[in-house]
Amino acid sequence: MRLPKLGLFARLFFLFGVTTILLGFCMAAAKAVFTEEKIKSLMQERHDGLLKMLVKIENKAGDADALEKVASEIKGDILLELDGKRQTTDPDFPTITELLPRAEPIGELKFVKYRGGYYLLHQSPRGWVAVMSTPINFAIYPWWAVYWPWLAMLVIIGTSYFMLRRLLAPVFDAVQSVKAISQGDFGHKIHRHPKNELSELTLGINKMADELKSIFDAKNELLLAISHELRTPLARMQISLAMLDTSGAKEDMERDLKQMDTLIGQLLEGERLEAGHKSLHLKTLYLPSLISELLSEVELTGRISLLNKVPEIG
Image (cartoon, rainbow, N blue to C red; front, top):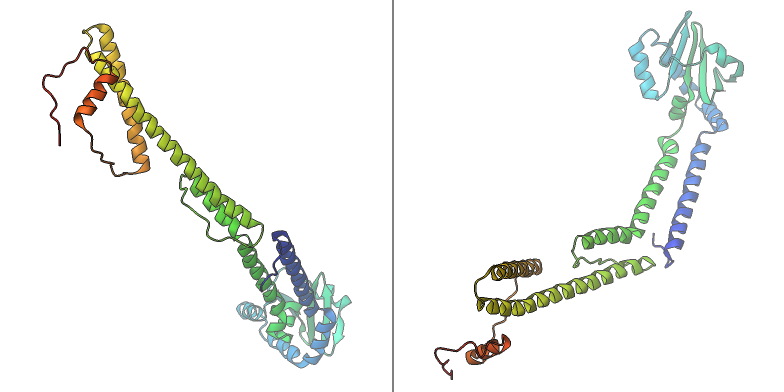
């Protein structure tokens, strides 16, 4: 069944409406199968067969196992009041004196509705035989007439369930995607996008994942850049500190600088591990220019002298 191109609310309303109507129809059909008038009519048509069934039950009087077996076959309960003795497969089975005042004759049988149940009775020279109408219904109705409304209801409920699950599948995808994104998997994407309002949700989650990934990548790059830049003034401070005379203050400063260098190293290493291994970018430098740049940055040009000239290359 293909739903028309409607909004999500309209689709759900349509699905629940059709399901309710079909279930109501099946319940009405199931109830119509078991109307009292139909039961009486079919009992009259099959009077002889039902009479033989009750006589067969009477012949098994005194054999509890045999009665239980017959009750299982006819899917109901049995009562025997023969020769002044009562035997039944159900302790709550009404007595014959309770059933007879309301009973209607159907040939040699008697039929009665009592406390919501249907009973069929037969009198023999030895006494009475009675069974509930449930086995009578199963005996006189074709199996499909009894079961089809209930089977149809199960089919309708199952079909509605799968259609509803299909309609709401994007919601389940969205839940799984949000869980993955919350755990840092920004590459997780929703690939099924419905043609209704839920597409805004699924497309929005994909867009949110891309934006979060961009933000976190920019944060990591900024953090790495700042950490690298901190190394330069830290190196100048260490060089300047090395030129000072030994003292307690110098030792404290060296310890602080070492701790700062360790923290920066841990920060850089953590970001590298999180971002994964990346290839190094190699660059050719001119050594004399590099040395001159370092000496000028630490402003030690007048205090440091080179013992040998750096040879020119090339």
